[in-house]
Image (cartoon, rainbow, N blue to C red; front, top):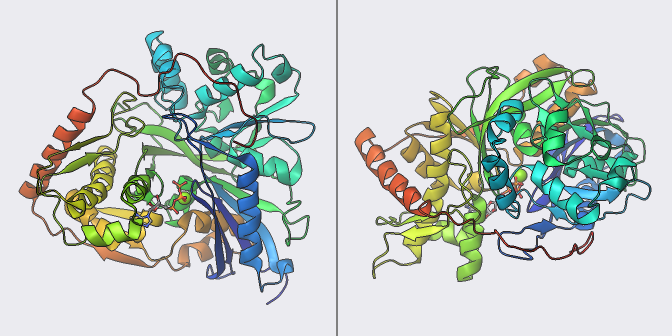
Length: 504
Ligand SMILES: Nc1ncnc2c1ncn2[C@@H]1O[C@H](COP(=O)(O)OP(=O)(O)OP(=O)(O)O)[C@@H](O)[C@H]1O
Ligand SMILES: [Mg+2]
């Protein structure tokens, strides 16, 4: 193989970093992953260590390139978990804070007070997103309140506030940048224009000087530095949010496609040029932009589910099993009327209810672990269907992500949705999507070659009738209503502890 013939794709996810080597025909030559932990300093709080994120990127890269000549890498493509935020010193690159995870709900009360002050509509109109603690804006404000209360260091340019893509890019190349799709998830971006919105920066108390420069998904990005055994100077040719990257890998630029990525949480996304706010509980967002600076913007609709694979992980840890063992128990079992509504940190799309509480209903003395495991899997599918149904008429749902590897879940999804589910037989589609765009950008393949790449799927067809589907979804919605029958935010604490620094 000639030099510069492969793409190294790095997917920095919530529970791990994955790395893939993709050849010029789109085939995966090598893959590796490195796990990543998270801490829960308080109920509703979720943090990750910036240093551990970097270490997992380095470890995954090193083990992916093991036995391969690093000089073969033409370019790097990055996909990443979105909305998570951290603060670092511009001069040294040293983190000042931990990463507040997208899953963190500490700013629920702040969001509620902004909504009470009447900012909900403006925020939704400008950004396409409901005012919810999942997005970065209130996380950024919280970090600044603790590390730079009067914002003087932010205004002086001493500090950098950024998402995970910003953090990785700054460590590679020094400049403070953010990819436009990631920027669209901060709740600070005008999603029509692709620019920071000065009015929203004011509302959230975030000085513009602390924010990164917004660039297209194809850059220009810095070249990679300090990622052995990759030689310094290999270009980063694409950056995409993980969900956006998965849509790209499903050839999501073709009209009428909708996909669900089943990871820690789940994201349902489809391209849509409708940039007006629709009252369906879905978000408007930017899928990607190619070309120069903010380039040609591809708009999308998206719905996020906070607890998907993490529901299974929580149950597995609670009962001392693995997610795979629970999936085996659930296979062939019936939930017997048990419903688990995994509102561990409230509910996101389409409900957007921070006060909802995780709820297990319908148990009898006959209820055992298989019923609860089945209810946990079904909760993922019910939540995805609630969002897909809001996204419009789609006969086929494209599926990917760690939990989508589970055939029981895929059949449950087809049965609950009454749609065909196309399970990707290629894993790590977020990394693949980053590779696909990177190869296009650096000229390793053309758009028409990309169209022809293999995208193998296994098709799951519905086995239930419409009446049965209506009955089960009604029972699910009754369980959701019970989870929502509360008005107390779960993580509304009167005082905050001091910041612990970059490594929790
Ligand atoms: N057999 C299984 N059935 C269902 N879910 C599973 C199974 N095995 C693992 N999972 C779930 O898959 C999730 C991991 O998926 P994935 O690797 O796509 O997530 P991630 O990339 O780390 O997170 P994210 O993409 O949300 O940032 C875990 O939450 C885990 O519980
Ligand atoms: Mg992922």
